[in-house]
Every structure is written in structure tokens, then in C-alpha cells.
Image (cartoon, rainbow, N blue to C red; front, side, top):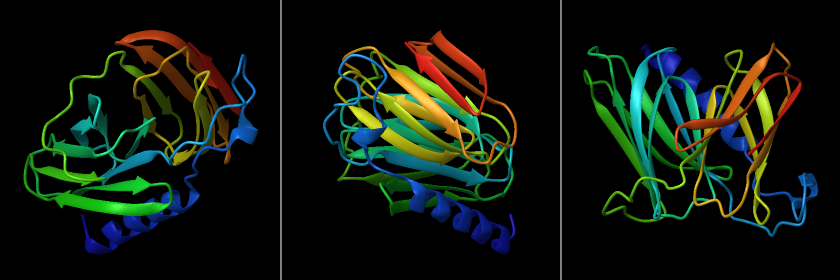
Length: 221
């Protein structure tokens, strides 16, 4: 990838970072005690950048749980209800010298960066301290995948009955909910409305909810 293209990708990612938000209880209101959830720390997001469509595998870990995410650049990955320290290691699945980079964003701040141009190379970054050992695989492993037109801007609210997070990302995006203590509800709102979006929620690899369309989609576990 040319240097000017890399700079453009970083500029796009910086714009994403400025838009990310912490919990805002005024956006609640699904059911039960939802909408009266306590404040939480900003979510930790990982932005994987590279040649569009370049495949990778990522090992994401915080202090409690870990996940293996397979995807293609660009991709936004977020841990909901993160417990730091957290770390991400991204391995290219192509044997060329193209650039693949990652950055960790906490709230609105870029806190660490990593990149590789090596064939099948690995880039890593971490925040909140040093991760000395990878945590056990998440259990339950609740993941939410949202896809649609590349670059579609979406706002989201992901919550259980005692915790809530607002999100703002450019698609595609993956959300990993660490240690949910109740049923989870997620709602996504299109900002640019470039076309239909698709969202699905899985628990331990089994789909429990899905939605197609827009300009908003609600998933309920």
C-alpha cells in the first residue's frame, strides 16, 4: 500500500475515533431495568486497516476473556464491558508485503498502534497495562456482527439489564460482549443510509437473533 493511502486510512480511522462515545443512559429503554443502567467506562475498540478485502485472523483478549476473530480489512472490533488490560494480535493471511495496521481506541483516544508489512506477518497492540497471559476463551461467547455497504456509518446501543454501551462505527463491525449477566439487546441506526444492513447475534457460535434492512435494526437475545 502506498504511504499516502495509508495516511488516508489513518485519517478515516481518526474520524471514527472522534465519533466513539461512552455510555449514555438517555438512550436506554428496551425492557425491564434497561434505560436505568449505571455509567460505564468507554468501550475499547480495535481498528484493523489494510488493503480492502485483505484477510486476517485476530486474537483479542482482556483480563477476563479472549476471542478469535476472522475477518477482512477494514474491520472495527469492540469489546463491550471490557476489563483491562486488553490486547489484540492480528495476523495477515496473505503472503505479500502489503501494509496491515491496527490501532486501539479507548473512548475518543488512540492509545496504541501496530503494523506489519511482512508476508503472513503479525501486528499487536495493548492498553491498560501489560497482558502477560491470554485469558480463557469467552464463556458465554456473545458476538454481534454488523455488515452492509462498506463505510456505512452506524450508531448503536448494546445493553443488558444492568449495563449499557453506545457505539459509533463505520461498517463492517464486530462487537464482543464480555461476561454478560443477563439477556442482551442491541439496536443499530444507520446514519448515511447507503443501503440495507445485516446484523446477527450469536452465543457460543449459535445464532440467536438476526435482522436485515434499515434504517434501524433491533436484536434481542
